[in-house]
Image (cartoon, rainbow, N blue to C red):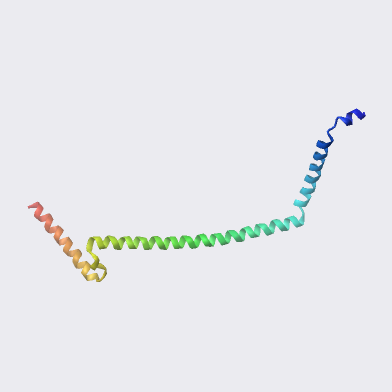
Length: 115
């Protein structure tokens, strides 16, 4: 019978037994009240971080919308300057007059082309 015990790998068996012991103890520790308090605290911290991140994202989105609207306005102003000239933004009546003059010239040019 002693020959049977001599064939057993004592180092491997000891490591296996230690693993089983630590695994069993680990399950007990991880399912205890103290562990649950740690889980709750960590989850609460994650939720606070999420809230902070969402506020930052919302702020960035609002700023991006403002920037986009201002950029569109700048492009519309540039386009209007190219079509009607710089005087259009100084006085609205000048802009309307130039617009009417431009339309009249276009109509005259079309009539001349058809004759």
